Image 1 (cartoon, helix red, strand yellow):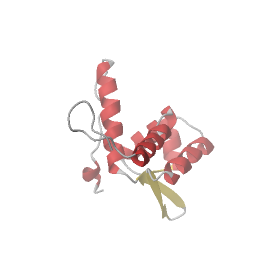
Image 2: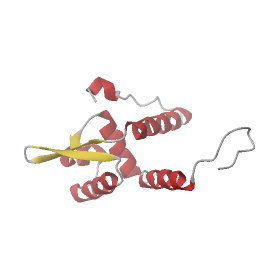
Image 3: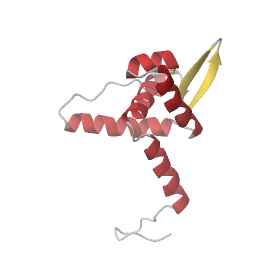
Length: 121
């Protein structure tokens, strides 16, 4: 690891940078970002997510599969339904921060969110 010119900061290992780039890459589509945003507010099944994000069931299901394989969301069975939830609270923090900052810069009010601890997570 090298020390940056800013004085004392070390560069992360290449493996960590690759993992971060992969996570950001998964969130690089508006649909997946919207799904993570929605799940940050609370768990949902595919039907509820499709209605909220305006996608088709097959499309939302495919996005969820990719997010699940990357470890960003997980699912649990609730009767006959698969219920999805965010599996990484740090990703929620990053998404909320980025979306909130961009909304404010564009002159929109910051989106209202529910904190995970308020949901009992």
